Length: 435
Image (cartoon, rainbow, N blue to C red; front, top):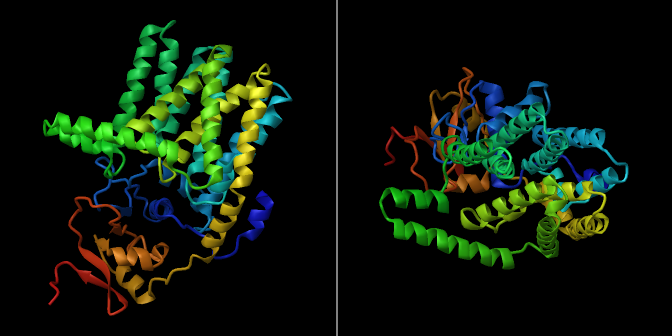
């Protein structure tokens, strides 16, 4: 099936979802300008520290690596995703302790709808699947030999994972809880570090977009505790509803059953190994976060829960006594894999044919002549033009910054606007008043 979809790609294949443009263009801007602060942001301000976009600084650092090796700017993100994924699969193959477990683990990973879907995508979710596999290897090594060196490798691995998605810091929390019976102060310190790192990193190194957590903090600062509590309550109630009702198709329902069955098996067999117990706890923490603070619709639960559930599944399969539960979990994953095939064919067709009008060469040249510019892109331009063609540096090699107003945010004062007038793109300086 992977070969089939690979052969279906053509020269028009490219980014399709809005976030993909941010990953692509901000990695390119770092490569071209040497500045890690984002070229594309929602508000023109970026994060409080560093001016990064809503996804943080780790992705431009990672995705610019292949650009430095002269990889194609059109495909450097999918190639990087596959490279990292391949490295973790290779590490899993080297680590294998039982010949019967590794093929089943590999079947689970490659037979996941998540792997298939994001293997042909500009989203970084394959990186997070790789992180789940990598943490499985680190946890497994630590619980096999609880040496200080293995603990340090594990803590550093979690820390690196948290740079890509702050919720991975919750693995410190789960590890801390598991260590409290034997090492009380280390366990408590890890719990505090995990919660603190997740809050600090997401607050200061991500560009803030509207969500329940940020809205509640704003209300608390205004001493409106009642409204803040109601916001969290309503969000929880809504997310529970969507968890039970929201779907993208039959494959999505089977995927939800896979997550639920994984959680049930994790709770039942948690005494079988420390790895199962810890990964079950991590899944519960992630699920609680998604339901109470974040959201469980519009693919968010799919993206947030899949890597953690994979970590738990690998731990369950590792235990040779859990033969039938392991096969059931692999079977559910494969069922979702086959059910997603029609949608996968559709989305690849959309990516191949997703060709918007390009940016005119005269406009590109005019943008390159700007200096110290912050250009606000009109919402109509966002929908109707190929944003990948926007230049990221001027003729002097200095970065050009853009505001992409997907959200209603407090924006930095723009120096220019890119908009449509008489069916043509124009750049209007904010210093010139329209008559």
